[in-house]
Every structure is written in C-alpha cells, then in structure tokens.
Length: 448
Image (cartoon, rainbow, N blue to C red):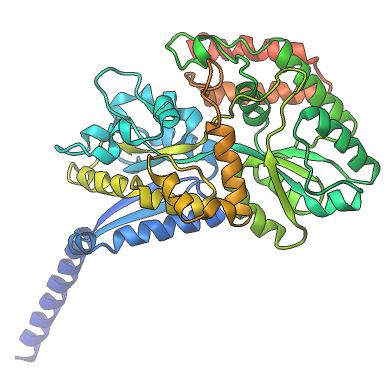
C-alpha cells in the first residue's frame, strides 16, 4: 500500500509540474528591443510597467518586456541580423536614419493600420505632428504609418557655466553663431581649457543638423524625402568650409573627436566646456555632472555669414516597429500598447521627463498648461529644441534626410570627416570620397 501511495504522489507531482509549465507558457511576453539608456530607459520601463498593470493586461497575462540592446546603431544592426526570423523581437526600436532600411523589408514588419481589424485613430497619420508624420510616412501607396514615432529630439548646445565665469565670460551669453563660438573658444583655450567642444554625433550634428539649420543640400530630391533615386551632393562649398573649421579647431586643441557617451563624459568631467547633443540627453548629462558645475543650454550655433536667421533643425530619435512572424494574437496587444504610447497624456509625460519632443498633436499643449517650459533646465532645453525644430516652416533641405542604407553611408561620412579633421585628407577630398562611396552603397554598386 505504501508503494502505491508513493507512486500516486510521484504522478501527482509530475502532473503539477507539467501544469505549472503550461501556465507559465500561457503568459504573453512581448519583448521590446530598444536603445533608451540611463534615465531614459528607467522612465520607459515605468511607463511600460503601468501598461502591464492595466486590469485587462493582468487578466490576460500580458507583459511588455523592454530589453536594452545598445545605442541606435547597435540596436539596428542586431535587429537586422534576426529580421524575418523567429529570433526577431515582436517590437524593435529603430532610429530615424534606419527608416528606409526597414521599409525595404515590407515582409518583416506589420504597419500600424494592419495590427488589428480595427485601425486606431491614435495611430493614424493625422494624429502625429506634421513634420514627424512627413518623415516617418510609408513610401508605399495605401500603407499606413509603418512604425510608431515615439522619441524625437533635436540638437542643442550644452555648456559649462562655471568655466565661462572662470574665463571672465558672461555665463548667460553662450555663443549664438559659429563666429561667436570661435571667439569664445579662443578665450577659453587661452584660460587653460583642455578642449572646448565635443559633439555626440559627428555627421549628425555637423552635416545633417547643420545642413538643415542652413537649408543646405545633402542629397538631391530634398535629401531623399521627395522620392526615390536621390544622390548625395554634400561635397559643396558650405560643408567643405565647415569641415575646414573643424579641422582647424582640432589642430588648435578646440574641437574634440569624442563621440556619443564619451562626449558626454568628457563634458561632465570638465575636459570640454561645450557639447552639442540632443536635448533628450539632458537627464543623462545631469546625472553624469552630478552637481560639479552649473549646466547651461542654448540653441545650436549657425554661421551668420551664410544665413541671416537659421532655418530649422531636424528631429533625431526613433520609432517602434512591430515585426512580423509572431503569433497573430499578439498584434492587437501591440496595437493597444502603441495606442497607449501615442496618447497625448503619455507623450506629455515622456516629454517632460526626458526632454524628447512630443510627436503627437495635443501633447505640447498639455506641457504648456502645466507651465513646464518656464520651470527649470529641462523646460528650457525642451523649449529650445522645439523652437529650433518647429519654429519656422521647413524648406526643401531642412526636413531631414531620408536615404536608403543611410546608416552605412553615415559610417563612411564619419570616417572621411575624421580623416579630414585629423589632417590626413583635405575636406574636399574627404567629402568627394563620401559622395562617391555613399552613392555606390545606395545604388548597390559598391565594390566588394
């Protein structure tokens, strides 16, 4: 009898164990690969957790699960490795320069209007800020927005107010133009600053944003926004002259080639006095500075000799793509999650916490009603970014850059810019080579 009871107990434990595995597998886990680091990732996790705690999601066992992969370039590269396979995440964050890269694989993603049988007004093009929807719209007729724009930012100038004071400069008078920057930089250098300026994104700030700020062409067809078949044409006098200045400033110990997080670190450590970076990086920069000095923020400088007033900067950032190949039951849930992220209330909250710009209609009005823009450095940085981006109607070459294979092209441009800055090539030689190789990459005719 004892052996019989023992066997029954073992069988019961096996059944119980099997049942628990089945129950665990019933949980609907939707992974999100993203590039939101530090305070940005922490805020995104809080927003995601709130969605997970909705009664309907708890009842259905739904869990949106964010996973930090790396910076924008890394996340896109990792995503492309698994695109179209079962290893691909249900949701992938892709930065704006990868927009056409993803659109080249229509079988690998589900457009916003195909996530369920009932398309949502919150995911309709009309719900998004005009400049955002113009950039992120589909190149294919009859297709809705291919992805959900979520994090949009524009470049600003951060500076060390304490270093300005120590050099006898007015900390409330940062440089407005590049001409003023050069004068201030020489004063700071004479006062012992190791370097004066670093830029988070070399090409992003000193080609793409700079070009838009001055309405200068990077490629034909409105930098690719007006149609397919655009060609790079950035090897003209405007960019040659600016790259010549960067090379001179590097030679004179004014410009540092640190990039991305490294650029933020050298700024936080006092090794550079000024930093061009997206306004959305302010929460991370504040954490790195940790009260060592007072941070100032201003608009990205412009060349007064080239334009009376700057035009507009462009929106960096990223969008969320729903990748195909998963259980059909998850796509209506992804739609609900995307709707949640696209509400004006969530966008206003995200905007105020991170300094990313609102991407949907109504979110900025909420922030204004809450007097966000008159409160503290985050409000000031956000207002500067919004005014730089949306302060003037865009012109032909100030709407952004939308080119095929642009992440790869950008790598070529960056390497060529570095060669010119270090004095290994002339600026014209570097930009000529960027155009030659970049156009070959875009047309698929590059040498193996």
